Amino acid sequence: SQQGEEDPQALSIQEGENATMNCSYKTSINNLQWYRQNSGRGLVHLILIRSNEREKHSGRLRVTLDTSKKSSSLLITASRAADTASYFCATDPTSGNTPLVFGKGTRLSVIA
Amino acid sequence: ETGVTQSPTHLIKTRGQQVTLRCSSQSGHNTVSWYQQALGQGPQFIFQYYREEENGRGNFPPRFSGLQFPNYSSELNVNALELDDSALYLCASRGLAQETQYFGPGTRLLVL
Image (cartoon, rainbow over all chains, first blue to last red; front, side, top):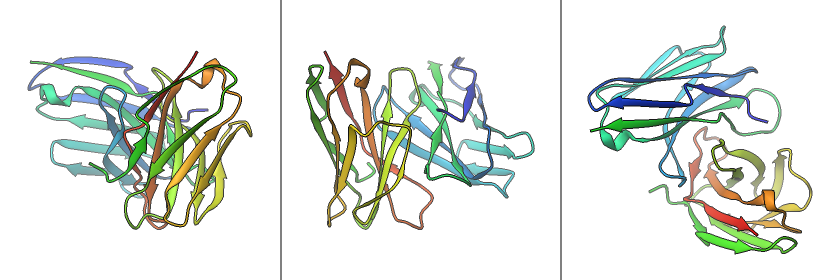
């Protein structure tokens, strides 16, 4: 079963605009990670935020984490056509032996 | 590039057959995990191997089995293939103390 739920399922924006994707999860976590996937290929790790962190930045990416609401958001600023991909959040649960639990992803389309 | 390779890239099998997928981990990584990603879904955890022993398993039947070799490369075996086994199979490697997993490009399996 999948723990995370990304919102929205699909997002279409113009180049230069910001893109915001949200993720909700169900259980206690050690950390939450965001991955990117192009056209059904391998996953590329973007950023990791630990349960005791509230915000993290990496280049044009900004991630927030609210453990009280069990939710996270990924902001991509000044989007480019090359950002077109599917984005997944994945949680590292504190209990159980599952290394990562993924959501269903958000399909982002950036139109030039 | 993550340094994780998988073979083959694509595979077509018929129902009831058996399949072996292979993964070569990034150098120095002693933990490998396998995931199944159905079309339009997020990856689902199958199992994890550390130092040639399975040390975690998701909700998959016993006909999904694996091996990890002394050089930390890995195999995923699926017996008695079913149509629903059609998916992208991803392996990911990491060092035991690392939080980030590094994914290979995947093997796309089609069961007819």
